Length: 182
Image (cartoon, rainbow, N blue to C red; front, side, top):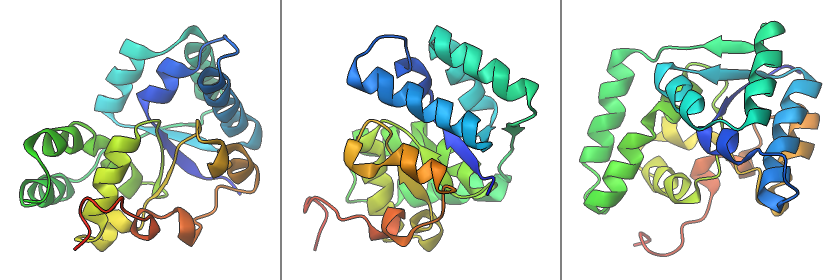
């Protein structure tokens, strides 16, 4: 099964050629996307971040993906962009710093919404913020968000199995750390 996955620039930056566990995990994740035949989604913001931060390995991977026509260029409708910005702005339980972090990475959610609702990123802080926001917006809650550096998430096995939309991987089903729990 071919799926389209949003791949954050944090993965591009960390996918170097060292044997550091995070570097290797990111490299393996990108390689598995390619090997299985999945696609990668990018909007203009994410593409600029990739160009700025990508490792040599990520640059070669991206070239291979492009040559196989597996890079998907997306644009989120303006109404969706405004909706997400308003949701973040009205989240009074978030600090200003958390709101700014969420706004900085809204493009990941935008790209997910116009593709298969799949995001991969190393940024657990932002994932936790969007997990909190998923309690206020079901559409955010439907996004599957994986972190390739977390061994317990089994992201490469998930890719091999078709990157299915598993309920336990959706943001709405992730537990919060108690900071925002009522």
